[in-house]
Image 1: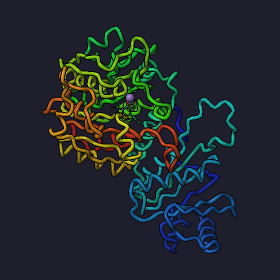
Image 2: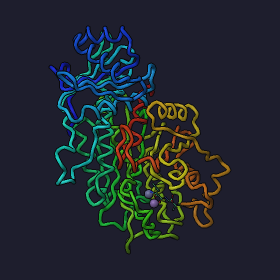
Image 3: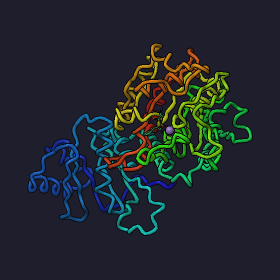
Image 4: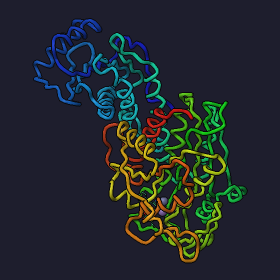
Length: 487
Ligand code: BES
Ligand code: MN
Ligand code: ZN
């Protein structure tokens, strides 16, 4: 996937100069004159005065009275990472019609340069490969961007991190936006295999060896589709001398969720191609670790299947035997995600000997309805893990909200004729799904389940997040992994 634009060290006479402005005072104009030219500083000063521009966050003033366009964008001192991301999106909107842009980075906000860059990159994203007649003016023209740091502000590693993160989010969005007739479980698995060029180890299980490796419930979920299921295990070993994993990520990868025999309604089918958003996020987060040559050992397990209907479909009433030995009474074939995830969690725990697991899944309509895409729910009994993830959520703007799943709820997934019931009775569907998963994760494992339903797509674009697949979770996970100390 090509980059949106190249970051260069110097743009000779870029078409546009973007100036984040905190306060229009003499000190600022002097610094600008010193860095660029007196003419530039004077134009800016005049423009601000003539147009009575008042500096408010993301307010824009465009000046076209000279050799090149100058765009002033208001920023507040001490802006948060999430605010800086939005501001970066505004920078991109100003620059997209031109080829080359200079972005002045005043020393007061140089610590946010990486978020500015990330915001520009994420705003530049569009999924247009299936548009054969798109008008050329709809495409971004921006080819080169130069960040012009005042002395001491330049931190190349942080910019490199932002670029890798942007590539990861783009990748997750592309996977989410691909139509379900193209991104089948097989195609998804092949796409992950392509990441081997970055040094990832990738193993794919397919119908011939899926069930015998513990993915029997995933096999049942995918049985009715002509696009057969896959499980993918991908590993980044940043510390090859150690055998253990610092983190194992698990993702739900339903490439289309029709509901199965418990067929969804027409409204319910909307966006169900993005029911693999959890898998996309964890794979993309792993790609970012590889791009940055992280020192962590991280593995990913994703269960890929299409939940279709047909004579081969699993049914409500079926009893499945999971690799853990527990039998599972099926009550509703539309609760397929937890089955796929349970197999992946079991694999992570037993085959990869994970001691820390985070799973991401578009698991329940209940979570989508409560949080409306503004939060994902987090289920986690390990306080330290919950705190670290919640903090990463706040910093990245991909926010988490805790829901309970104590022992009182757990008995609600007991079955009368098997060991576990796939869905419990009650309106608290997200909690019951978490209780089900918990039956497949041993107590000693530090584990968090993130129900990202509703966060994986967006109807109306907002700064740095387009409509369609959002790539939710990639930034959250990468922020969390930055805080992770290797075992
Ligand atoms: N993929 C859906 C959950 C979902 C709904 C994600 C809306 C994103 C937006 C999941 O597989 C599902 O169908 N869940 C059912 C479970 C129910 C049948 C117990 C639900 O939550 O309604
Ligand atoms: Mn479903
Ligand atoms: Zn689903």
